[in-house]
Image 1: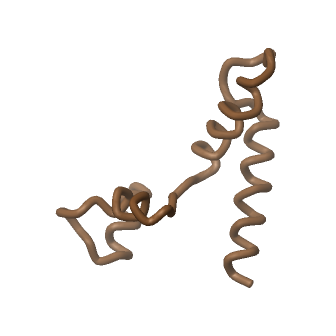
Image 2 (image 1 turned 135 degrees about the horizontal axis):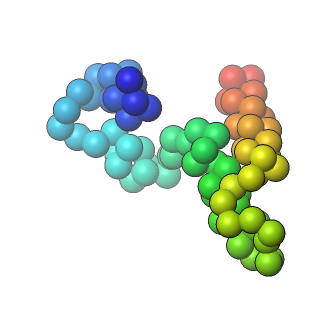
Image 3 (image 1 turned 120 degrees about the horizontal axis):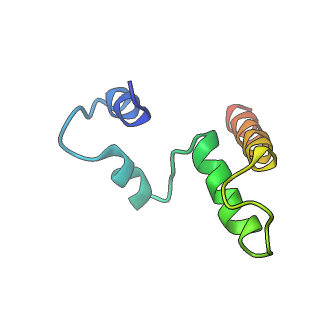
Length: 76
């Protein structure tokens, strides 16, 4: 099951309205390690002359740390 399918099922929105679009309209986003690592790479590595063109292990480590912190702060 994809993240999109799981979210739509959890929101009882199978088919029809796009759950991701509905969340975006309200300023909320669904991310995972890969999308977060890509965002980190685009923001921080693209500003300087990075030695890599795709997210590397450091980008993924930062993504995992950010996601863990967000998860902890939202469950507290």
